[in-house]
Length: 253
Ligand SMILES: N[C@@H](CCC(=O)N[C@@H](CS)C(=O)NCC(=O)O)C(=O)O
Image (cartoon, rainbow, N blue to C red; front, side):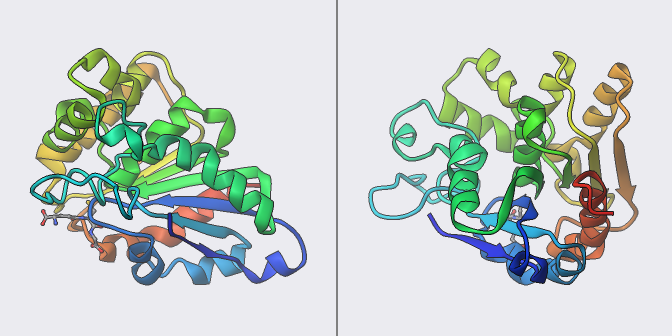
């Protein structure tokens, strides 16, 4: 597995906290690294940025027979597959939650007690879902344009049925809206969603997250940003505000 790390100057003197960034469909570790422009603020705040890939890669790793962009390579959905042939390598949940942090924290000056998580689209789903299932592991969570209800949208339906099988009750364990509905409580949470995002209505369904958080009276911040689309231009426009949000909860500012 390939991943990218940005270490701020402060890491030369002491271990620094980290924000894990989970990317969306078709991405590698490079999209956020090269397009988001997050390093300037991470340097100011003293935050390490950890950018994993979006699926396993390499020889003998299964891909969609038609190489579809929304399943298989580049589309691991941050879950552990249970169905053949995917389960042999598609174990992204364990990779993000423990395997990668264990490696990072053993090899680099990164604080094992202070982690935050963020992501975009499929990666927004990953960040929200992992933080809801393991709120003690993340001081805060944020997302851009997340897939909030994957068990009830075409991208999620395809991925979950392929990786997890047909039992919808199993899917709900990895679905942020369903997790909140069942009583899971996230760490401090910030979401930005563009109103001109072409995937909003069919795939992302942000209103469902707002509704379920309101029903639970959860103190979350979910912002619609007028006129913004699904692209990295949107992420570049608001990443500073997300990093400052995480910095507050990481005890930096
Ligand atoms: N290729 C797909 C969309 C894929 C897509 O928008 N991917 C987003 C994440 S869901 C992304 O970050 N793409 C890479 C980039 O913009 O750098 C399509 O044409 O419908």
